[in-house]
Length: 346
Ligand code: NAP
Image (cartoon, rainbow, N blue to C red; front, side, top):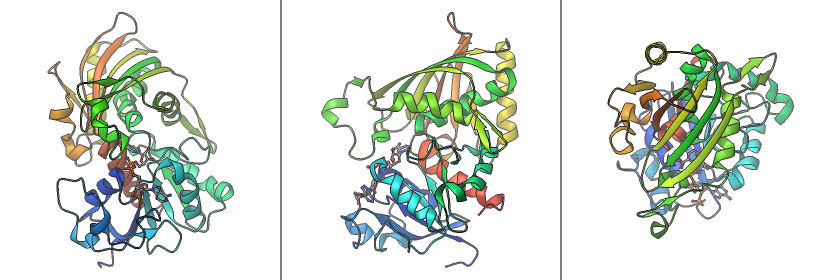
């Protein structure tokens, strides 16, 4: 193993998000997978023998022959990426942080805990200062902490709205989502329920979007987050799309802005935060973005928006799209870890 790379583990390595993490971490310049873990049913088995591999590329050779371990302290790594089922993630992640691991979680369990940063680095990296408060909350051994990334729809909504919020303020947002089947994990929604159909309910999803967004767009102030005061209403639907959550967003700004001003602020934001991919891309074509064509833009990390037009109820409306298991989960967790490392916080 190369000495420069940080040892990382994947909790929930057999799940949809766990597999995406393993796939994206192959040949990563900073991280090297040295441990994988899942439930007691999988523990003790060789990864390639037990996983129902869903990614288009092969299982990375360095992971295929690894033995799956239990999700307990003792894993040979510094950082653990968690793609655990939320039924068990809370307790396991807390225990890992307590024992000195840096836990980067995709699960809902700790997102709204006061001392836990809920972070999209291109939006609210300053919230990472909350880490300092965690030794009290979790009684973590030195270096232990929990960082969370948002719900897969919340990420898309927050990245789409952030430049507009920063430039003009937001008072009201109404969002209707059309969410991909892969957002429900594997095997997820039965095919007979979803084929040729729309399911107008996703458990807890609307509440997550409405509350997480206010934390993310909130301000870090003297050791706490002052939530944004925006009225948000979310309506969530599961649709027969494999990957990519699409959403129709209407919003009212605090300071009135023209279409040109809004598009300019989106463009400037993308230029400012651009890493090696577009963080936020605007399409002039009103029939874009579409999940089939655009979810994989920027290797799945680009949030796409389009068709900004006047709304007769709120001020403006537009379409947004993001890849749910990359931008909305595994990729979001990895850029959080990269950011922590770059800033010397790990
Ligand atoms: P999933 O496919 O159902 O995978 C769940 C993982 O948790 C599996 O590896 C499973 O291991 C493990 N697990 C289950 N019970 C366990 C136990 N008692 N102890 C240890 N490990 C256990 O789910 P997913 O879609 O990958 O989602 C994972 C997490 O990410 C969830 O919290 C979800 O809400 C969140 N998330 C998902 C998405 C998405 O687009 N899918 C997006 C954002 C966030 P076994 O195979 O051994 O049972």
